[in-house]
Image (cartoon, rainbow, N blue to C red; front, side):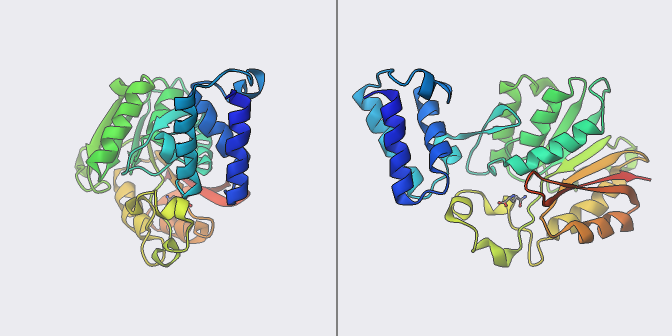
Length: 284
Ligand code: GLN
């Protein structure tokens, strides 16, 4: 079968099954499994695909129809123009989180030798991206899960930043010593922020495949901020900054918590959908 026809077959199966984004999902699945770029599905549509490969792609398409996101099927997801490997302990990085990357990059310079702490690093998408974009920076990437840290470390290797990437298995900042004045220039985090009661209502793509630990923010969705804002405030030296991903309705509460702990110059930044998504603040 030809690549173009195979793409159309998968797309039409997705459409008929009611998959939410049939075209992009079919393009990504088929092109990645063929080892070609998405544009090659059009430019090189007559490329022959052998029968075994067609069967493999059809089987993977069935997994998507069964509710598994394409990123999980492929074991990788693109974030800020780079591919990130995933495993069972890592959230699939979302485009929303690119808003946090842009906010940090706007507020710093690639010439500075800054230190970053990424709390709940997961696949390492935030820490690895910032290390790649800021070539003089170093990061401590913290996660409660060793399985997630192994994935993050592999992503750091793949993107050539492993020598500046330091994984640490810990519960937020509890293992770190606030007394020695060695706090970072930036604390960054995309913590779990979904209300426990809302979790069950998320689509099967999310709730059946993203780890609960990376999503569940407790009864009011704010447990992570309540723990990590006061901890972070102890480590941040005057002028150091924090960038937190937040839920669309959490800006007011998070802003209040930041102020209560001596952080100012608070900025709430919206994502591409126009929803509040990132809180930036500076220790004053
Ligand atoms: N943005 C994710 C979602 O809506 C949630 C990520 C998180 O809790 N940090 O599924």
